Image 1 (tube, rainbow, N blue to C red):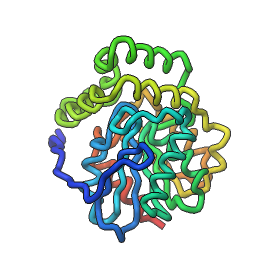
Image 2: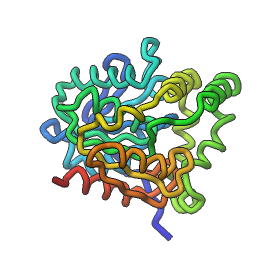
Image 3: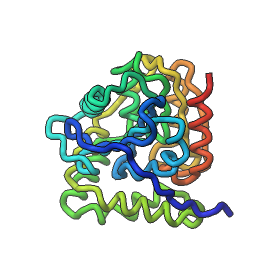
Length: 269
């Protein structure tokens, strides 16, 4: 039985809101930059374990989506427009080059950024994500439920898909964190992100990604399956593939293994 993961204390050395994007920065300014992108209905706390493990080696930037910690973005309706918001944040922080790791929706943003910044992005990690996230009706129903009944109505079913039964028992602090992040999300921000996810389809553009890429899949991920992850790895030139015995929130279901795979890739030639 694995040990329960506690969430070590990490303290940002800078934070603020730029162009409507709330962010936090960890690690020394002179270090290589690592940008993390959250999944839907989570916030920057998703990456606490990775920040604690890597902030001595990287300047880590984490950020929040509209209604997830950032104010709503009324003029951003697509994943590309979300990525453009993040590009403005990077410009404002004076970041010329960076590495990116995104989970689920964060992976979609990473794909957009890889084409937006083909020279600035040094490496790309796509975790528990896909080139297309399912039928429009699914996302429309989720948005409607959130707006009409609140986030509580979606919580149990969603979080059940985020963890394997074994991980839920082994890591109760991670499970509690996931629930708190989900219930802290504003319904209107959740609906805005659902619309961007609904309309995202990167399938035809995957071969255009020229950034060195690692795809991390969850063997038991029912939200973004291993089969969908293999499409990414097979379609992105030179992409590497890794699979962990996790459900959707891979970095909370197998934190040490996830961080090891991430760091090994970031430091590889």
